[in-house]
Image (tube, rainbow, N blue to C red; front, top):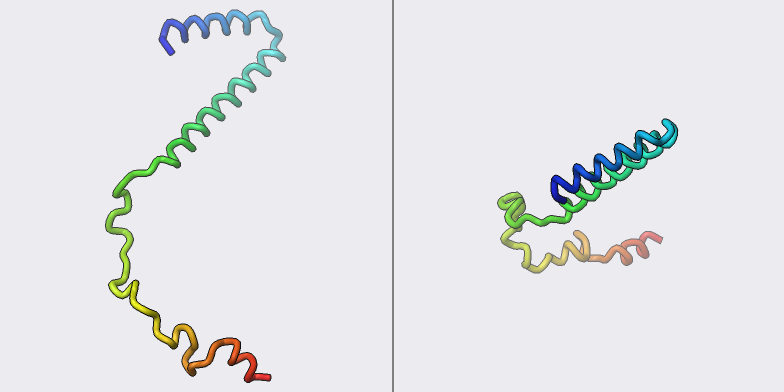
Length: 91
């Protein structure tokens, strides 16, 4: 928006506000503050979605054995039985 247009709008708005009762001016002020807060929130949300390549470079690492098979103990437990088999044997 050009500076001249903004000044013209401000002048027109000021002229209208001067003619309004105080209660109506308060309503306009309340609405203007609402619009300003909405704009601030929208700008903040736009920045959240922006991705920056390399931002966390060096912060994350992966183990060298990440793709290796997991041992049977992981799947079957220390004694070689599945959890279900262990639960059945307790009965």
